[in-house]
Length: 70
Image (cartoon, rainbow, N blue to C red; front, side, top):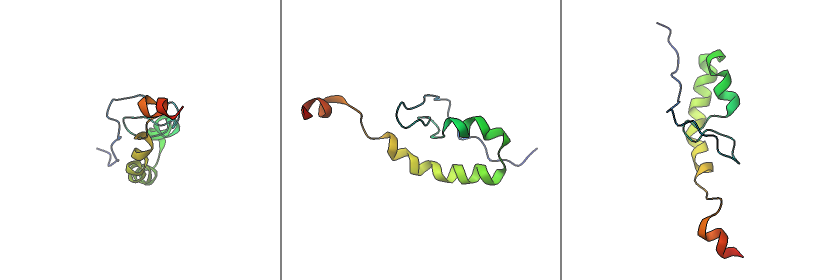
């Protein structure tokens, strides 16, 4: 058995329209595509950076607040 960092995929594969990252695992499309070819060090680096990306998806793009601006 190979010692590798598991994929952070949670099977919620939807790309955020403006941030261009997966709303499930927070990886970019490039990171997802290259995951199986990355070294364990690269995977660990990306995995460590994922929590910092979560706030990028918490800001709302519209809704009531956006409508009231006008």
